[in-house]
Image (cartoon, rainbow, N blue to C red; front, side, top):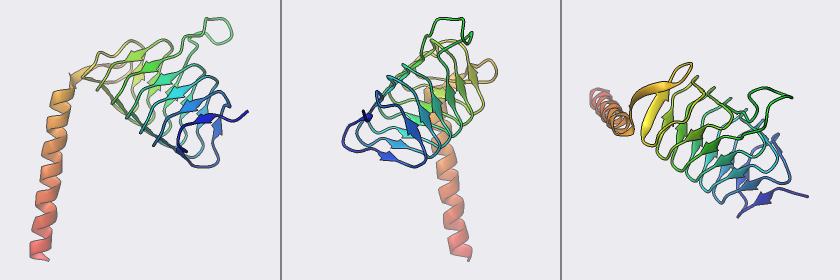
Amino acid sequence: MKPVLVSKPQIYEPSYIHPSAQIGEGTRIGAFCDIGKNVVIGKNCNIQAHVTISNETVIGDNVFVGPATSFFNDKYPVYGPLKAPVVCDNVIIGGHASIGPGVKVGEWAVVCMHSNVTADVPEETVVKGNPARLYMTRKQYDEKARMYSAHQKYWANYEDEEG
């Protein structure tokens, strides 16, 4: 049995995708990923290389997952009940982040790189650290990103005029 692939997502080899996984249209899966049993990944997601997604995890549409991120479904391996994480739509997760069992990451949230998420992340918030804690709102994050982008464009134009 092959994974349910809607409209042929882009999957880089070698990656393992369990046959029961469902992957939405326009999603890209990087190399060396491990996608477990009954995982659901929405449309237009970008899953970078070396990502591990445990059984039953649900990831919404338009989600970015940075490299070497892990989604866990078992707090006490072998002994505990399995409780998969849920990631809502339009979420950004930085590289090397860990998303714990049973955690829900709300819509438009951002998880900074190397964060260890052990509790639910409210929608439109940015969390970072170990354990992950509120850092700023998504609105503040987007404003910083716009300022950085404008700064980069200014200096790129300046260098073109001088060069």
